[in-house]
Image (cartoon, rainbow, N blue to C red):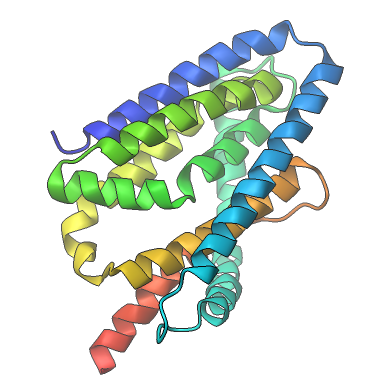
Length: 240
């Protein structure tokens, strides 16, 4: 069944978020703070390790991954800032909060945005959705479902019920890639996928920095950067 992987992933986020939000009510604030710091550190390490892995495993003769990463991040950030993706996500989080959690503690939108970004920017979301759409293979998304389910428990235990609604983002994002898989698959060579993964890992690092409250980075506005390597190689194919 095409799309089953995304459906299971969405359900895992909802289940984990509900469990975590229940835990939050019995967790003192000082414990929530230290858990958030631990999660932030873990996300930073994941982002750094993934970034270095993609850089050092680039095949000889390939496009310089660092230069293309910089290009993608700069141009993608400008596009995202112009569109106002972060603001749209924030408003969507506030809308969900007004409809479903009007008595929240103000962390709803933060949980929604942070979890949405974390669950969507990684390589597993892209590659898994493509495999699902092209071959009906769900192994990658099933594995991601386990990771996201556990992560949503931890996130929701500190940021609350907003994490549950990040499942909407997962469904829309991965579902769109699954449906469009047959159209974009010819351009997603291993080199393109690696470059997209590199940019995604940099954004994961930025999410970790936000969670640690070192500096506020508009990660949502950087989302278009993930797809610019695909555009780059598509243009090269047209002219070459």
